[in-house]
Image 1 (tube, protein in one colour):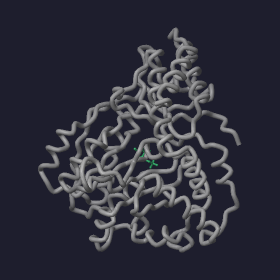
Image 2 (image 1 turned 135 degrees about the vertical axis):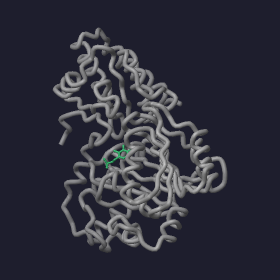
Image 3 (image 1 turned 90 degrees about the horizontal axis):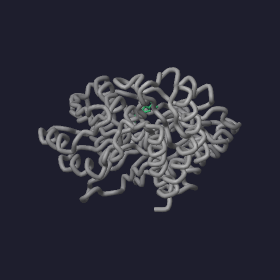
Length: 390
Ligand SMILES: *Cc1c(COP(=O)(O)O)cnc(C)c1O
């Protein structure tokens, strides 16, 4: 079942045939041992990807459920978290904490900018933060967080480090076994979802808890959710033929296949490929006089918020792309109408990106911008190849 359209929004991302085929396998009982074997293998690959000896959870839901699971199992109502926000999805943690009765303070960057490490440290010095949430890549702005810098500071003040990887996991390294500049300076929770860089349709919430996060859950007697309580899932994830709530059987088949594809490519190779794609896309768009909102230093490998040159009508532009089979997303919040968001993650080929660049170029020409699509394609190919060599 070939894709009819090139879905270049920041998730869901294009689904390859192998994943569709897995999805279409016979639905078995959620307690079937053959199914459980496949699920266990998918969970083992997830653990490998996050390099954790903690626990991973893959349940029916979306990324927002993962955000909620991360917090509800580590921070009790009345306790305090610090939210580092680089846009719309960072801000979403305010909604989650508010719903859960968790106190929250947020450091909110101007859109396209990054919260400085000095501001984070200054805030943490006030004390009393149980956890800090950081969005690895904020999907509204294309701003990427700097883990090397932020993890050690958060750990210095004894807070749990919760990473929203929804727009990053499987495209950027998220290594929970890695010590960032000192012993015990690790990421404690990574939360993510199936439909972005993992390349599987939407429908799965994926969360990894390291030892310190699991210990935090243990200390809380109960949490105010039944479905999102990891205590109800730990023994199920160890033995997936057991029942707590019905597994999304076919989505697990698809996820298993998605993780096999990632393993086959190799985690490190996949991270390198995404870094190269990001650089190549940004360089190619520059030839169209289009720039990303985030500066090169912290522009995400997975998606770009691309600002229009003067004189482009957002709705006409995106509708015209869609008519040619390329689907991109509108910009959010204060940038609405001023740019578009282009996803460049998951199982998308160089040919597909080049085709998208050609179509973007043609569409710009229609709107009176004399650009050279062949040049953009050439720049993409050259920059991509150069960065894959390294
Ligand atoms: C998409 C996204 C979410 C929300 O995920 P849903 O699956 O839409 O609930 C959260 N955080 C980030 C960074 C995202 O990109």
